[in-house]
Length: 442
Image 1 (cartoon, one colour):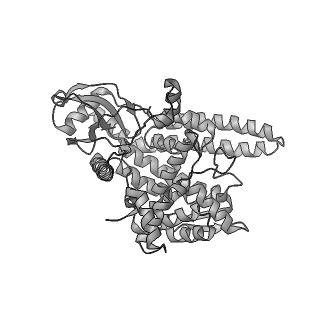
Image 2 (cartoon, rainbow, N blue to C red):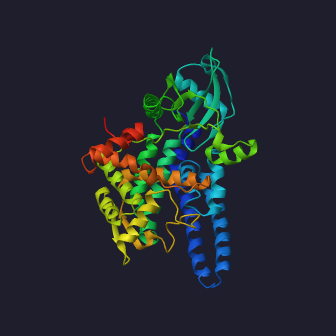
Image 3 (tube, rainbow, N blue to C red):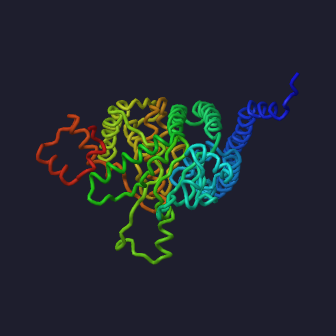
């Protein structure tokens, strides 16, 4: 009779029970944060002084921010992605943003010896066979992968090596299912918004991020598009090192730069005049690139015109076309629908408003319940949300709907849904250049 391998049994039991342990840790912490706010809402309702209320809310947000930070930091995985999504200055309380922003590129790093094992398995050779130099300390570590600076053998150029954390995909799927259950509870109790559909699309989109072959293909397509349509592209896209891409490893050109939210501080430190300086933008992450279905693309183009033109009737029609099912709880439904469209799909803040709080009592979401939200539209919603977070962080208040209006016009005109005279339209197309192709299907 063969002896029992206690170590193997222990490892199997640990693997089997790990998702349950992880789920328990999430629910204990989520319940603590949620009930903390519910109890606080009762307590603050007895305070009549507005300034005292604001001070109390700030302390509560700071307390919750510390708990959220601790949960995301300790659990890692998908919750680091959650911190990136909610930790934006246009949506979350300032105390949350201040605390969560430190998690962006400071996820726990995979040890260097494990990194070398993953690299050698994925690339099919010794690390020293591929690189003259490979820095053991990562440039940054995020929820799915970490990046290292290196130099290819026999080449003077530096590259970035992106390596997926081993086992992270299984952990993230557990996290997403827990978040989906929490989203269902929240939308039935406090938030009249179809959060569950959003989490379902998040599950699909984040699944894409585990395939670096798909990401490399997206990088090459976008690089080709930008450089074919511009004499000098306004956006830098790293070149992929061919034959050095697998599902879990991606080697790309190294581009030196400054995180965009730190740009203002860097300009002030260097004493640079932004108006007289040629700045370039580099886009480095292509894990969630998505092709929009034609019906969604045109429906969103129509909604862009509605927001840019302050057209409440068209906004309501566009919501229906996109499959956004709403239930009104107010008298002036069309006015609130337009406000809701701006809150969800435009970057511009109303006059005097420094931060949007979509789930506040006076917000449009409290007056118009979003009962059904198409999963595929989440990628658009998140893009606008990221742009608004960047604009707020940079101190710029602009409307993406107004900026995108000409492109939306072109999309609808080409689809035969916009009555524009040929002469006027052609002159507009000439001025817009290559941007019209963003909404065009070849």
